[in-house]
Length: 97
Image 1: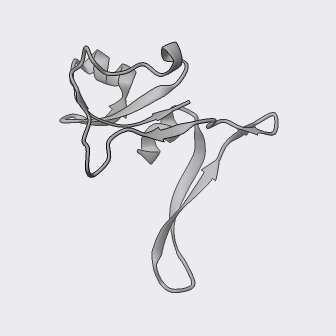
Image 2: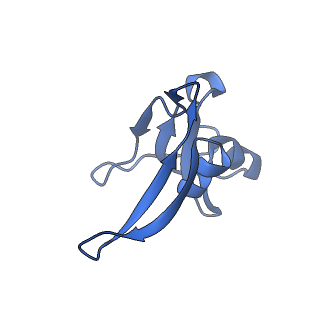
Image 3: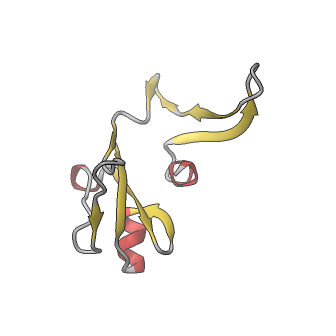
């Protein structure tokens, strides 16, 4: 998911780090534009108790294409536009605006 967010320009980057207790963590560099965060809304769609699957025709658009949906497909994790271009559906993980 982080690779998709970086490719779409929502985050600066990320790296794996180890905290003081010796546990691995991901450090994410958020991106800002004119003092405001680029990610205004991040909503989880699929949850462990309720998985949401969509065919290629049913993949939701976020705010008429201004945002993205992140979809887990048999061809990998990708945006809604990339899934439509690849003609695959899958599990809708989250929406980002």
